Length: 121
Image (cartoon, rainbow, N blue to C red; front, side, top):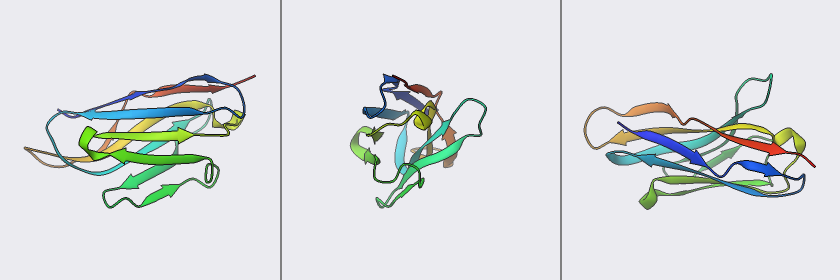
């Protein structure tokens, strides 16, 4: 069974930086895509950034120029470097992935348990 585990969240002041990590574990053949979503209190979960197998990336307009998503396929890990953090960046950040296991059918729309990001002075 493939699992996603996020880490790297925490409390940061406005203007600060954080780096989130998400490790996919299990019998992985390939990763089709990974991404980050976030959910602020009282709001719907929204896309932050995604990265596809070929390396193409997509960002929410609100984070363009401040956040960078990257992937280390050898480590089955996706990162989200978050710079110039704003109050509105707060929330629970969830890792999402489409993964092909060594055995069995592809597993789409996998989710991690989330990591909390708090931006406050």
